[in-house]
Amino acid sequence: MSLLRSHRPPSYPLGKSWEYHSTGNDSSNAFFYAAINAGGLGIPHLQSRIPLNRKVRLDRHLASQNPLLHWALREPSIQSFHRLALKTTVIGGEVVTSKEQAEIAWRNSLWNTYDGAGLRDTPTLPQSHNWLRHPERLRPSTFIRAIKLPAGVLPTKSRRSRGRPAIHTQLTCRCGTAVESISHILQTCPITHDSRCRRHNDVVNSIAKTLRRKGVSFLLEPHIPFASSYLKPDLIVFKGNCVYIADIAICDPHRMTATIKSKKEKYGSSEAIKATSDFLQGWNRQFTRIIQAPIVFNNRGFLHPTSFHPLSCMDISKSQICDLCFLCICGSLKTYDAYMRGCDTMST
Image 1 (cartoon, rainbow, N blue to C red):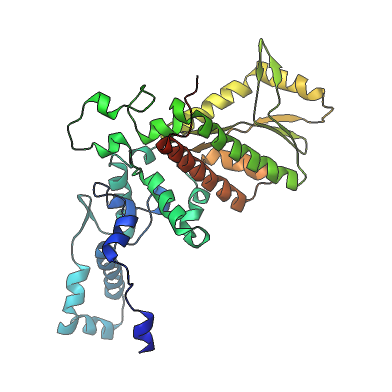
Image 2: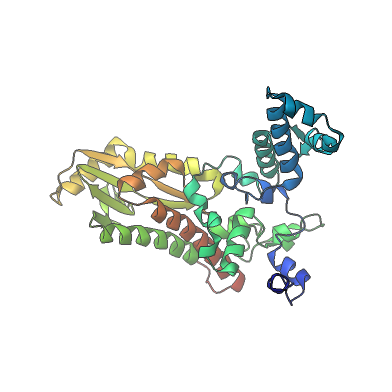
C-alpha cells in the first residue's frame, strides 16, 4: 500500500503538464535523442537502443567457446531474443548496426532540421552543456526555457508562420528592418541593443569578479591609443610573464570561428601589439609575451574550444567556465523577454 501511495498519479491533468514541457509539434524528435555534445538532450531512444544492445550481447555469446552457451542459444525459448537482436534499426532513413552509428545518425538527423542547422558547424565543449547534465541546480521553469533556446523553438513570427502563407510585412520585426527571428532578436535588432550590452557586460563582470577574488591583476576595458582611435579590449590580464588580451564576444552559432579570426586580426597585428606594449609600459608591468585570447560564446551558451585554454591560464576553473556558459543563456533569454515585453527602447 505504501508503494502504491508513493506512486499515486498527479492530481493535475497530464495534458496541461505535457503542453508546458512540449517543444512544439514541428520540432524534430532528434533533439531529444541526439547526444548532449551534439546539441541534443541525450535521452536514450529505447526502440533503437534495446535491439542494438541485444545484438552486441548475442555477438559476444556467439564468439564464446563455451558449448553450453551455444546449446542455450539454440533453445526455442530464446528465439524471441534472437528476433529482437536481428531486427533492422533505422534512424533518420539510415540503417544502423551499432550504438556509435546510432549516435551519428541522431546527430545528423538533428543537424539536417531547420532548428538544428545552426549546430552543424558549431564547435563546442562539454563545459557548455554542464547545466543540462545537472538540472537539479536550476529552477524547473528556467531549465525548460534554457532547453528551448538551443532547441530553437522560442516563439517568433517567422517560426509560427511555418507551413502557412504569409507576406513579408506580416513577419517583420517591430523595428521594421528584418524578419522577426530568434537570431535577429538576439544579435542585431535595435530594440534589444541595451539588453545585448547587458548580456555582454554580465559575462565580462563575472570574469573580472573571479579574477579579483583570486588576486589576479587585470585592467578592465582599457583605452589603448591606436592610430586615430583606440583599442578597447574588455580585459588585459597579467599572469606571470604573460599578458592576455581578452576580448569577449557573444555571436550567432555559425559565426563563432569567424569572430575568433576577426578578434585575432584586430588585436594581433604588429601595429596593435606595438601599441599595446607601449601602453602597458606606462603601467610598469614586466612581461615577455602578449597573447591574444579572444573569448567567444554563441547566443546558445556554447564556448568556442580555442577560448577554453586562455580562460584556464587565467585561473578560471572548469566549474566557473560552466557558469559563464549558462550566464550567456540567461542573458539571451532576458534579451528575448525584453523584446517580447517591448520594454527596451529603440536605439538611435
